[in-house]
Length: 202
Image (cartoon, rainbow, N blue to C red; front, top):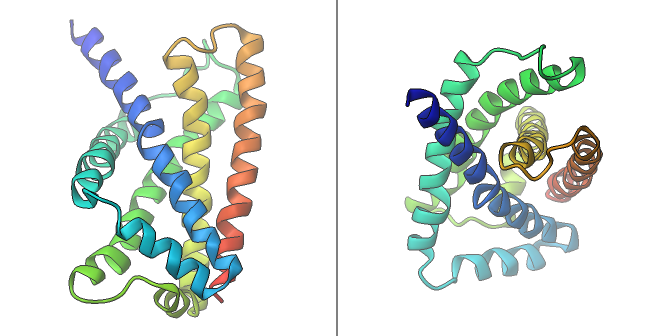
C-alpha cells in the first residue's frame, strides 16, 4: 500500500513538473525573450501577462500550488533517493544525480527571483525592463541568474525524460534513447532563449 502511494506521488510530482510548471517555464522564457527586441517590447509583453483575467487565481492554482508541491516532494526525493545501477546505465544514473542537484539549485534560484520581482511588486515596485536591467547590471547577479536559468531548464528537460518513462509513454529502450536526444535538444534550445534574454537586459 505504501509502495503504491509513493509510486502515485512520484507520478503526480513528475506530471506537475511538466504540466503546468514546465509549460509556465516555457511561457516565462518566451515573454522574457521579448527583451531582445528592446525595453518597450518586453514591457508590453510583461504588461499583457499582468493584465490576464483571473490572474491571481491562475497564479495560485496553476503555478504556485503545483510548484510548491513539486518543490517539497522534490526535496524529499533529492535527499532520500538512490541511484539505480541495476535498471539504468551509467549515463542515466548521472542524469538522475544532476536532476537532484539541479532541483535544489532551481529552488534557491526561483525563491530569490520571486523575492526580487513578485514580492517587490507587492510593495509597489514595477516589474519591467529597468528592474531586470538594474538586477543584472551586477556581475555577481548576472552569474547567479545564468546558473539559475541553466539549472532550471536542465531540470525541466531532464525531468521531461523521466515523465515520459513514468507515464508509460517511452517504454522501449529505443524510445528512451530517442527521448534522450529530444530532451537534450529542448535543453539547448531553451537555454539559448534564456541566456540571450538575460544578456538583452544589459
